[in-house]
Image (cartoon, rainbow, N blue to C red):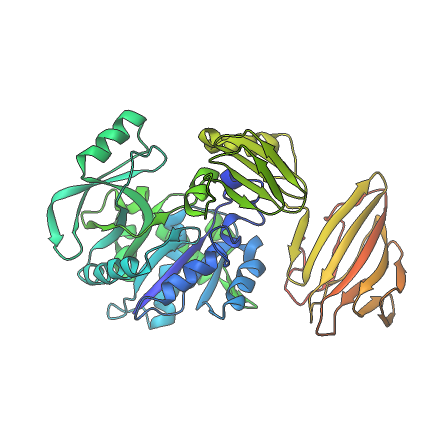
Length: 482
């Protein structure tokens, strides 16, 4: 049985301001109507013999990831929550341990084949992908650790490369032993790799038996395996999630599959994959995969352009107008505008790092923040007050909570809300309002079948999200602010 493992880590900082730490690129519909993680799940489901996927994600993304799978009716076999990012080797190790636990007793006779995929890739040719996976399953069944190398169509400096061995293991798929992994090259070296024909881009997609991978990890990186075994042994179920033991996982060394295993094992095999792959790692890459107009522009939202060519222009709401741009990226969101030449989009990550050093929130949050019960949008903020638009989904229930330093005024503008205020519980209809004094326990619920929207005006000497004391929460968030 093939068990897909979808790795939903990373922040996609090169795609800021759309992608942010608490709402990263894999949760966005960047290359179609579905989000990237949804496309990855659909891609896995199209492979014959695939089981339900195991998803590994940061615990702060857990409700967003669950909603993504609910929307396409593809229930994961498990959603494993990492308390902290530790790179791909530990993420795959815990997935392998969970897969073995789910598939049987963990004996040598139980060895599901893992298909490891990042959640944020685009693959256009599904048939070619399925054929490569089927070849990978055969080779994994023979004890090989398989990676998929992308057949390059240009000399690219933004990817790592894999050099193929001269001899071919499988004529049908073109699979061969891995001669070496190499880091991102300079332009001259990339040209030599491309012209030589025996180098492939490193895709970060893998296939191997779960037992086989753990065996290699035990030999090559035993401290990683020990920490991951302890993290899974101490894991606890939390709603639809499997929450790893935090102390054990945080003690785990941070390392990639490549560095920890694939560069050192004697059984690494690479299968060439020519399937319209793109890791959508930058705005330039997103321009490559998106539909373009006659002037080679990608236009999204309310945009007017004149004498603009080869550009990516995105508006989330406000009018964006351009004149005379050539090969630029312009991205407008509710709280930020980013402009860069397409030749410099790799440096967007440096912008994000600079903002983080300055303590800005824009790298982490959009103005609209999603919660398991719905969302809130900060409309206005100044000293002593803040105005939010709150949306509570049908059946959504905020935690029973209080604030020590702020009061709240609620006005319902759509739907009917159930309000708990102190010892009282009452319904609040459209155009009705209520006041929550400082230090008063309160809760907001939507008992109906349509979203409830209200305007919340906060007043006080401190309005931070950490001024929340939770007493009851149906989403298991006691003691957290997510």
